[in-house]
Image 1: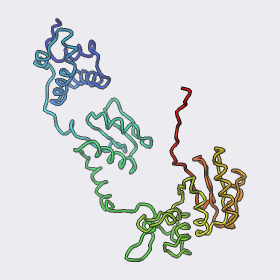
Image 2: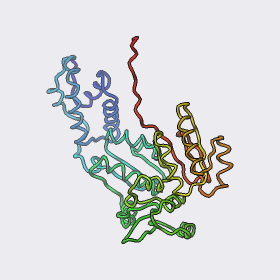
Image 3: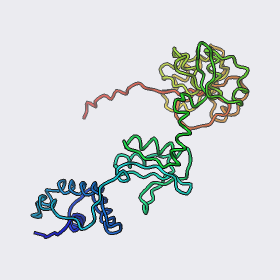
Length: 341
């Protein structure tokens, strides 16, 4: 049986001889460094070591080591009572940088690292995340830590920034949106440039009005759209089921569409639906084109309300399109069992 005299020796033994999880071995290795450099550890860290001793009891027993005796081993390092500094998340500002420091939380680390839009990087020497100071970074950090930590501390300068933003905490609309207030239609969250651009449009819920507003990037409040046709008109990128593709033709007439271009026919099974759509559009007197991407781009600016119908979710830019309709197929695929198997 191996003789151990203190917890520091036990930690060294565990790292060198036990099969530990990646996160456990990282914790113990960091604790070794902390005890050597700072000459102190916290009561929470001590408690966690005791939990790990219990967790790996079977491996200790195989080596004729028993957790009751191991738990009683003393610490040579000074043990101090854990304070808020070690149990709560913290956001601060240092030299025009935003600092995010948190207690160890596996779920938070996984979620935070998966954020593709985050500019935070891990400062291994100081054990915190750091990013250039910006409102976006502050909002991202604040939103993330409140999801994973109940206790959050903010530095005084961060508190001042958040206090300035508290005025907007009850703001409902952050993008221009058509809403109805006391029976009157208004554009919430607008600006002078947008007001000037749409001054010729009388605000109401007529289908062609909704379609024209979303063309300018204006959202439509869901509470004033009640039918599928209104939701179609009030969306710049509506989705339409493949089986219902011809249902949109009268809707296109009602929003005064004068040209339709088809993009990405794809599967041969879609050709029937394309031909049905083409025939329905011709009957409705709406011009139709499926000659390809070049024709789409070269012709759109010649019409008042040109629409793109996309059979594939491909990324393309259409500078003059009034609406882009995505065709989707949500029908389940039935797989029949091969009788020869």
